[in-house]
Picture 1 (tube, rainbow over the protein chains, first blue to last red):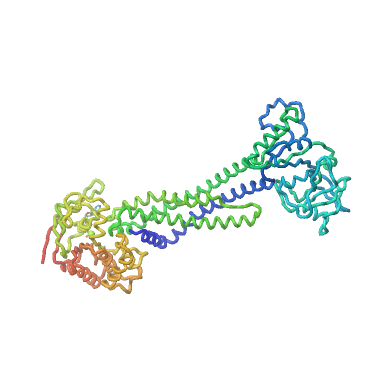
Picture 2: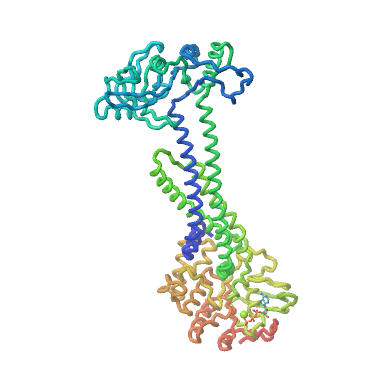
Length: 402
Length: 224
Ligand SMILES: Nc1ncnc2c1ncn2[C@@H]1O[C@H](COP(=O)(O)OP(=O)(O)OP(=O)(O)O)[C@@H](O)[C@H]1O
Ligand SMILES: [Mg+2]
């Protein structure tokens, strides 16, 4: 039997039992669509988190005061002592590491920002000129903070776009003065819109020089130091350098926590990947159900088409040809269902994408590959028994039953 | 061409044994036209099925064209059926979803004959059996006589040397039955070997050799 004839024969069978064909296509389609849709939601969530971390800056290392419990230091060492503060001098000493490209010390507080009669409470960030590069933010108008010695400051500030809109409306903000508490700052730049990033909206902040923030919030200690390593490969060295440099400055005590963005990202990545796989796997169960449906339908077909199978055998069909006909039918059904499912899954993905435009829903390649493959494999497996029964049918018996 | 020696066929139904054929020996020469008659249950269909390699005897020997076919494997039997034997059934056994033409070409499809050659043979068969106008019709759109002609054309499509018909007119009126017999007899005139099982004495009498089965054994074997 020629392959083209085998396909045509199976096609005629599928066309001859339309509602049956439609039912199986539906079951297969739902299974495949479920896998695609569910895994693309998982993958979307993963990419969303990855992007969120990525938008913090690349090759980023975050230094925060205090030792985190889980970091493995001997717990007894710090008992009874409050952790030493991180200072500007700590930050400046990081210049010694060859693995570090740049860094930005950070102080965070909240302040009442006033322009004329309008007042608004916003987060206030004290930092240095490098901050914009470390965090990979963009300036919409003007300039960022001027470079220079972080211990001395000019009365200038950079504001987020929402702050600009709320305080100045349509009026140009650049060059205007604003008040934070009892201090005046001239606006030298407006940040480009960036939106929410890990729960922190950079459109709503005011950035002032580090020294000004120290004075404003009356504190010497830093909230964080953001460090950018020279390259991805240098992150580990940079981390070790940071720990060592600060340990020496803090009289041999490891009293800071150094987080690499990589480590955090990897953890999230792993968790979300596993989650996606798990939900994808659960959805794949529906494919097995579809496979059982195919088996059931095929078993019925063997009974229903007894006479036809008997006839084919009388006309000289071998057992192998009968089996081939059944398998071809099953594979065509599975592929048809898979195609349908991929299309529906894609549509579903686009539809959810409309509802949550921020999340990049994409079906992972393994799901797009595995779903149709699972569909074909299950339907082939579940056709083994019916095909065998059909091939073993006794033609005399099959033809004599009316 | 065909030599049956001591063919036995026993069916087991529960604890009982039914002897459908008891020691049937029969020689059929190339080009013979024979009818098989006998009371219901005498083993006519069983004999025809064994002749057509659809069924295996429990004992005895079957030689077809000089070869012993009793011991062949299922797939080899299928191949011989495909190439050398054509079946015609009482209930036509056409595939309902296929057109007349598609039904006729089924054996050729199973044999893997290429489409151009199939087309050539189809056109000849459709013309030979007066089915040109019905080529694209499905069985439910055909009369009983037309269905049986489609079935005969199908049986002939691989150019078999042996045609076996089990009550081919059993489901047709007298007139159509005779028409169908005329078609089968043409196959015989063209040199084919034809065996027809029938209950109709008039139809049985048309054959040149008339075999009568009683209780699974040959009771009469007349030639004219
Ligand atoms: N598959 C079977 N299982 C059990 N017994 C069978 C089977 N096939 C045939 N028989 C028995 O064998 C005997 C011969 O059957 P067969 O069908 O050959 O008769 P027949 O001469 O063709 O009868 P009819 O004229 O009614 O078609 C009958 O007694 C029948 O009951
Ligand atoms: Mg019979």
